[in-house]
Length: 599
Image 1: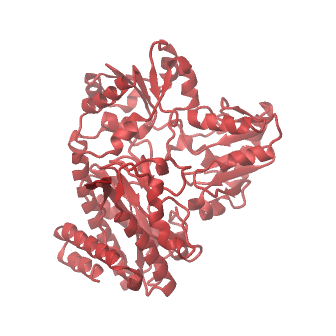
Image 2: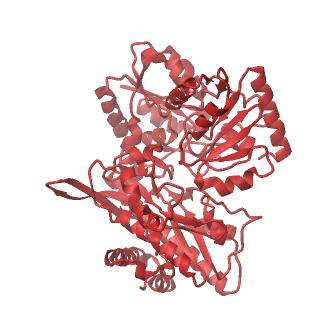
Image 3: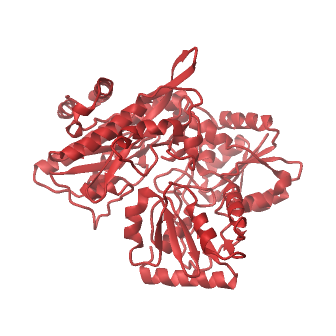
């Protein structure tokens, strides 16, 4: 990343380009043209310009103000990364809410032009912006890419090879998945379906890539017809043997850059189904209103529901992950007992090393969050080798990490007491645990939304006027992105995950938390599978099965605050951890595990 003087120079160059085009405000988002959360270096313009490295946030640049809007997960991180630079942090009150739009409306004079890159804003986003800005007499112009002209050493698009994800793991062939999509297309009377989201096209084609760190996707677009399909990708990324296999399944390769021209060449009789939330306004304009037919993201909804084969492999991945973490945490305990002070960074490396010893391991699923003491309160903290804190035999440590295995994606958070915890720490930890158990134990009728269940995880904290500034849970992919829609648990409908009904066999995280700035962070996270529970005269009821296998630290629990149902859940969960993991451990490790779950 560039330093502060260079950042000032880049900002000056951007403002010069704005003046030349009569632009009053310019928007720089976090995503790429595929609306991805995690993006290749080529598309990290927001980070390059501001220095802020979090995964969510938007820059608003005017001729006299440069602001970053982000949510509570990143406040502490953003303060540190923006320090001494030209950008001002604007704290979003509601995660993902477009509060910067209100700021524009209040600070720009009527008649001003707001511009952005049409590749980076979806149809849905542009329509919202236009509506809000026009009400204040402001004009939105989404056809301006001002970054390419000032980013001289911009990284090239990634060139890593694509590989096949074996049907053995996913349980369905490419042909079977495409047939399911085409059946949905026919019901909607569409001849083509444009797929822009990288996780979705990777899933439906049983392909994976290495273009994005920690997420096995590749840069491409997919246009599915009723009889054939076109994959728009740099052909050099696809080995010849794989190209032939794709061709046999009716999938032809075209250059990544030719999608726009191809869309323009389609006849008006061709109805192309698009998802307005994931299709850029740039591509929509190439199609035009005659050809574009708006609808839901077909593949996202299909891949969210895990099939029996995927669920079987996920259970195996959870076992491997539990074994790896037990070994990493024992390594930490032994180091501390020997008087050593390993750093947060050292522990992150050890976790990755232990996972890499497991079969079918590919990578971590995100940079490990290892936060000792006050660093644990930085919700998306990432230890760096040169600045990581030394871990001692005192205080508490938060560890949030995950892995990519060929047989599943994992995500887990545990908090460890490294010395006697305080009364306050035990209280806060137990309130978080009670919320975690409340969600894990939930029974709810079909059609229940994520926002309706989110309160279960917060209720005990709320009773003590406490809260946390992040969602309670997100969907998780299958050897894909650790954050996938559409389902999850959120406290506001500004996030799509809060407005989605929970479906059987969807996988989500359950991760309430609490953060005492400068002192400690608490989060307890397991992955939960939505399952069928029961049926009564009042409807069909669903619930959750916890899949993650790792002890919950008993030292941090105030058992007087737990009721009998909560104690029973904890006992049952630890028994399940023991049954599943004990056969995979050495004698010493089994003894360690038995000690950790002994109430």
